[in-house]
Each structure stands twice: as C-alpha cells, then as structure tokens.
Figure: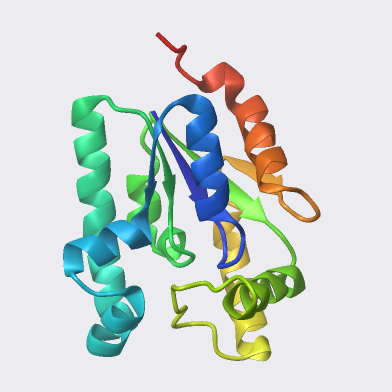
Length: 182
C-alpha cells in the first residue's frame, strides 16, 4: 500500500508525510529527496543544468522505479510527490494502481505563497524552489495545476491546521482502506 501526497509547493506534503508515516509505522519517502540522491545534485541544480523537462524526466523515471520496487516488495510507504509530478499524465497513470491512494493537500494560492515565503525567510528552508519566482506567476501556476490535483482520490484542506491534525485527518479518512498492523 502506498499513500501518495500531492499538491502545490507549500502544501505540507513532506511534513505531513513524515507525521503520517510515523503514525502508520511505515516508511516515508520524499520523491524530490530521492531524485537528488540518485542524481547527485539538488532539484535547483537539475533545473539549471537540464531544464524543467530534464527534471520531469528524472522525476517520472524515479517514480516508476520506486512504485515498481514497492509493488514487488509489498512494503507500505507514504510518498510525498513534488508539486509538478502529479500533473504529468504518465505519472498520474502510474499512480492509478490498486494499492495506491492519492491524497491532495489543499490550501488557497495566497496561503501557499505565504507558507513558501515564510519557510524560505524564517524557517531556513534549504531547498530552493526553482518555480518560486514572483507572486503572480506562483498563483497562476497554482491555478493551472489545481484541476489536476483535484483528481486525487482524497482531498484534505490544510488551512489553519497543524501538521499533526492533518496527518490524523488523513489517517482517519483512510482507516478502512489501510492494511492492519501485524
């Protein structure tokens, strides 16, 4: 079983994913971290060297290989996708398997913008976000991607909620679908 968190940058996929995986006793994987490890450079460096299309290719290949390995091993995990991964049809198709549940972490574009700014200036976010340029382009990209995210099987609004509260809400919403601990 794989719970895959999708949503725009700043939605909390990594933070919520870690908390949810801890509750479930499952492995947590951040797809961007895995890509950086495999490629030997940061997402920003991959964007700079290979462009967005080169990054998306590495992202798709890594996602397919990870999900294939997970299916073969039967290991359960919580997976946080990068903000653009779920918008590509080939990735969305791979995520349609029976043992994968997609969860959209939703918030307004304004709130996501504020979270990203706060994280970079106050929180000391070490990951540079190549597509975080200016507020207008941020909100436009968010609006363009939103219909794709809405195709996830489950949607959870994150506005005004703590990471733990969001993880609890996802856990409760999926309780009937999750394998029993054994």
